[in-house]
Length: 158
Image (cartoon, rainbow, N blue to C red):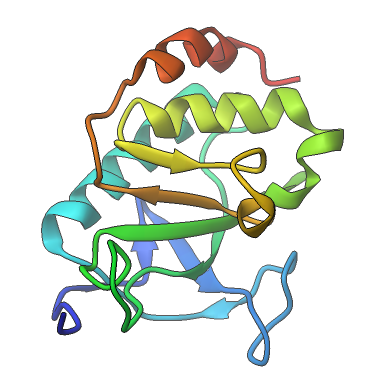
């Protein structure tokens, strides 16, 4: 599939940076980057992050880090309908997805908000390849039964 013409450098008012080698290091604030995805998927991502800023007691973050959106391969990344979230940085907190074992409550609270907006959220426990990022995509309907059962996590950030 061809690269979507639609691009973004921020979501819900927050810069999105690339944080993978050789350009930057995982777990850092990364570097500014231009990501490609479809317009409807970008709108879904905006809505998810707006909801996250509203639900999180830390408020709006300073930086979102990612391993990418569109990638020239098959699947939803190749269709411009997937996005990998590596971390989210607030002034006083760095949320890095591979830290799930030491920050489970916060991790699950973030995941529960994402699941309310995105049909697929692959997480740390999905498989070894997803322990360092949330893979979110437009496959399926948001608010799955798993999302509903985890929805109570949104009030428990610490």
